[in-house]
Length: 108
Image (cartoon, rainbow, N blue to C red; front, side, top):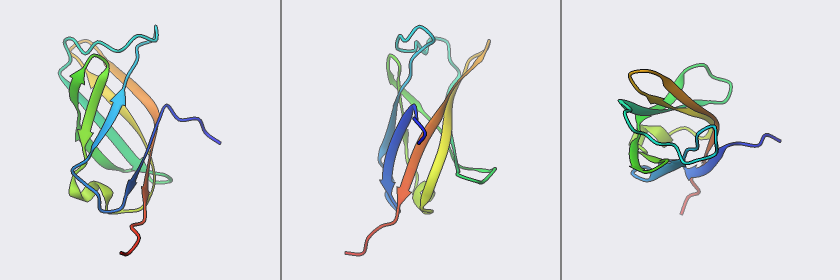
Protein backbone atom coordinates (compact mmCIF):
# COMPACT_ATOMS: atom_id res chain seq x y z
CA UNK A 1 0.00 0.00 0.00
CA UNK A 2 1.34 3.41 -0.98
CA UNK A 3 1.87 6.10 1.62
CA UNK A 4 0.74 9.36 0.11
CA UNK A 5 1.88 12.84 1.13
CA UNK A 6 -1.75 14.01 0.83
CA UNK A 7 -5.08 12.22 0.35
CA UNK A 8 -8.71 13.25 -0.07
CA UNK A 9 -11.98 11.72 -1.23
CA UNK A 10 -14.64 13.61 -3.17
CA UNK A 11 -18.04 12.40 -4.37
CA UNK A 12 -18.67 12.39 -8.12
CA UNK A 13 -20.25 15.66 -9.25
CA UNK A 14 -19.27 17.65 -6.15
CA UNK A 15 -17.65 20.94 -7.03
CA UNK A 16 -17.12 24.35 -5.51
CA UNK A 17 -15.35 22.75 -2.56
CA UNK A 18 -11.73 23.51 -1.75
CA UNK A 19 -8.87 21.04 -1.67
CA UNK A 20 -6.36 22.30 0.88
CA UNK A 21 -2.69 21.44 0.83
CA UNK A 22 -0.12 22.13 3.56
CA UNK A 23 3.36 22.23 2.07
CA UNK A 24 6.68 21.93 3.87
CA UNK A 25 10.21 22.79 2.78
CA UNK A 26 13.19 20.42 2.93
CA UNK A 27 13.77 21.38 6.61
CA UNK A 28 10.17 20.40 7.52
CA UNK A 29 9.16 24.05 8.00
CA UNK A 30 6.01 25.45 6.44
CA UNK A 31 6.90 26.59 2.94
CA UNK A 32 7.31 30.35 2.41
CA UNK A 33 5.68 31.39 -0.87
CA UNK A 34 7.53 34.71 -1.01
CA UNK A 35 8.33 35.72 -4.58
CA UNK A 36 6.24 33.05 -6.32
CA UNK A 37 4.55 33.81 -9.63
CA UNK A 38 1.98 30.98 -9.59
CA UNK A 39 0.97 27.79 -7.80
CA UNK A 40 -0.63 25.05 -9.92
CA UNK A 41 -2.02 21.61 -9.06
CA UNK A 42 -2.04 18.78 -11.59
CA UNK A 43 -3.97 15.49 -11.25
CA UNK A 44 -4.20 12.66 -13.73
CA UNK A 45 -6.28 9.54 -13.49
CA UNK A 46 -4.30 6.46 -12.57
CA UNK A 47 -3.01 4.76 -15.72
CA UNK A 48 -3.52 7.79 -17.96
CA UNK A 49 -0.95 10.24 -19.29
CA UNK A 50 -3.06 13.38 -19.59
CA UNK A 51 -3.92 15.58 -16.63
CA UNK A 52 -7.66 15.77 -15.99
CA UNK A 53 -7.46 18.42 -13.28
CA UNK A 54 -5.19 21.41 -13.77
CA UNK A 55 -5.79 24.53 -11.78
CA UNK A 56 -4.32 27.55 -10.11
CA UNK A 57 -4.08 27.37 -6.34
CA UNK A 58 -4.33 30.31 -3.97
CA UNK A 59 -2.01 30.89 -1.04
CA UNK A 60 -4.04 31.15 2.17
CA UNK A 61 -1.18 31.49 4.65
CA UNK A 62 2.30 30.26 5.37
CA UNK A 63 2.67 26.83 3.75
CA UNK A 64 -1.01 26.48 2.90
CA UNK A 65 -2.72 26.65 -0.48
CA UNK A 66 -6.12 25.66 -1.73
CA UNK A 67 -7.73 24.82 -5.03
CA UNK A 68 -11.45 25.22 -5.73
CA UNK A 69 -12.89 22.27 -7.65
CA UNK A 70 -14.59 23.12 -10.94
CA UNK A 71 -17.66 21.29 -12.25
CA UNK A 72 -15.71 19.21 -14.79
CA UNK A 73 -13.03 18.19 -12.25
CA UNK A 74 -15.23 15.62 -10.52
CA UNK A 75 -17.27 14.12 -13.34
CA UNK A 76 -15.21 10.90 -13.66
CA UNK A 77 -14.86 8.45 -10.79
CA UNK A 78 -11.48 6.90 -10.06
CA UNK A 79 -8.12 7.40 -8.43
CA UNK A 80 -6.10 10.46 -9.38
CA UNK A 81 -2.45 11.07 -8.65
CA UNK A 82 -1.05 14.53 -8.63
CA UNK A 83 1.46 17.16 -7.75
CA UNK A 84 1.64 20.83 -6.89
CA UNK A 85 4.20 23.11 -8.50
CA UNK A 86 5.19 26.51 -7.15
CA UNK A 87 6.66 28.64 -9.92
CA UNK A 88 8.98 31.53 -9.14
CA UNK A 89 11.34 33.52 -11.36
CA UNK A 90 14.32 31.45 -10.19
CA UNK A 91 12.91 27.93 -9.67
CA UNK A 92 10.06 25.46 -9.81
CA UNK A 93 9.39 23.60 -6.55
CA UNK A 94 7.31 20.41 -6.76
CA UNK A 95 5.35 18.40 -4.18
CA UNK A 96 4.24 15.02 -5.49
CA UNK A 97 2.64 11.78 -4.35
CA UNK A 98 -0.82 13.32 -3.92
CA UNK A 99 -3.92 11.11 -4.11
CA UNK A 100 -7.47 12.22 -4.88
CA UNK A 101 -10.23 9.61 -5.00
CA UNK A 102 -13.50 10.48 -6.73
CA UNK A 103 -16.19 8.08 -5.53
CA UNK A 104 -19.41 7.23 -7.34
CA UNK A 105 -22.41 9.23 -6.23
CA UNK A 106 -25.08 7.04 -4.64
CA UNK A 107 -28.66 7.73 -5.76
CA UNK A 108 -30.92 9.31 -3.15
